[in-house]
Length: 246
Length: 306
Ligand SMILES: Nc1ncnc2c1ncn2[C@@H]1O[C@H](COP(=O)(O)OP(=O)(O)OP(=O)(O)O)[C@@H](O)[C@H]1O
Ligand SMILES: [Mg+2]
Image 1 (cartoon, each protein chain N blue to C red):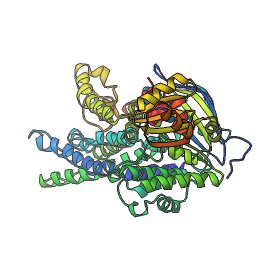
Image 2: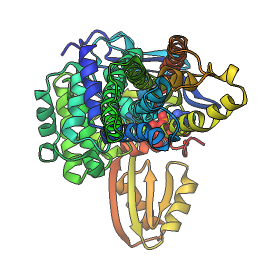
Image 3: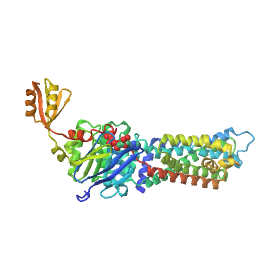
Image 4: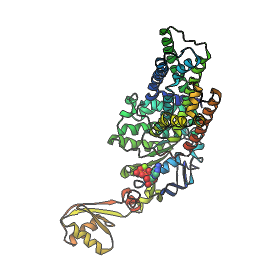
């Protein structure tokens, strides 16, 4: 298993998409953090729990790109016939998926840390230039950052699962973006009590985006983990049954 | 080599594969033994690639089974050390360098990465090791695919059209390589459409037609059963074909202005031309039936699987 992990890690690092998505995730995290601060109405208190969470949850604004990296790492194998080579070496396909899941859990964590550090630095600068100090010791800050990191790490595994189900990079990426950016928010607006249980909304709750309609962080984490576990099972089944013909 | 003479290196038993309504492989059974080159031929769409993919566990048979040294491929602990397969291209990310691609494979397979340089040298890609696979020519891609197949120094080789895209020296090199691999006691199953090339190296021939087995025999045996063929050019080829159609002793056909007569010696053919007044003769040779003749008799009905 450790040989397979090393091989999969090497494969991911040699894929340029994975390397340029890292700075992009951090940049989106910075933008996601600064935007609510810059746009906040003059009356709001940036040092309230809500104000802090509103800013800091933006650190995970780029986490969707972690899903994209997971999709590229898994579904991408079917694009150039890499899957043939991979399964010739490791015919137990579940082992390959497990290794990919672990590698992308690590990649998601690294992206998450990079985005968190960049977003914190940006927020620190904004607070300072407005005559405040970013109170890192307050749970509204560090729990939010921790939630962002958890979301990013979990999204790495989610990307692998979705890539395994779709086995087509384009379908998977278009599907994820369509769902997460368009369909899910629309459904949530239509019926918050039902769709706060949906995975994307649970991820917003886990990264502590302030909203009375969201689940609390604990149940949100459970929902997200359960959803990802179910997709992993579906992805495993899909890959185990697939004929590798290219 | 761990492939003993006792059990076949590769076994297909009643292998059948359907893709929806298409029967790609239909009740196919044959063996491949150590120390031999088995040529695997058939029209486009006959089912060769599908069969090879079933042998290595990439495609699941609808029914029947395939095994390598007595075990299903998926049950092998270190498959790269036992089987080297080359299936339609190197299966490398175009942005990966040749060396990176092989290192990734070697790492997962538990093969020392020093072996990567060895196989790159062996296939003539040592000077291109640092180049991205996306920039490779067709022949270089084939060589890289072969390099991956050879990584684990396997006793069994499954090669799908390995000479595709190789230059003439490359084709000659491949011929020698196949010979020496079998000479070292390895089992080699090789598909190709280059029949004269295969005839040079094959010990045994497996011919498929529309998913079914139509021949599985030593090449010598198949050739021995062939009658001789006379080929000639003369002033009035149509008259020769016409005359032969009345004898019932031989079959003649026109390929352009070339008269191909199956079952006559050169002498008999020459005498026939002069007896029907179709001379003068411009060209006359006699040859034995070739692999190509066998192929056209047994597998030419495929026509792309139609
Ligand atoms: N993934 C697939 N889905 C549907 N049909 C397939 C698939 N792969 C192969 N086939 C069909 O199976 C049949 C056998 O194809 P295969 O590739 O095994 O032939 P082949 O003998 O290797 O041909 P060629 O000489 O052209 O390489 C063809 O009719 C092909 O269209
Ligand atoms: Mg083929």
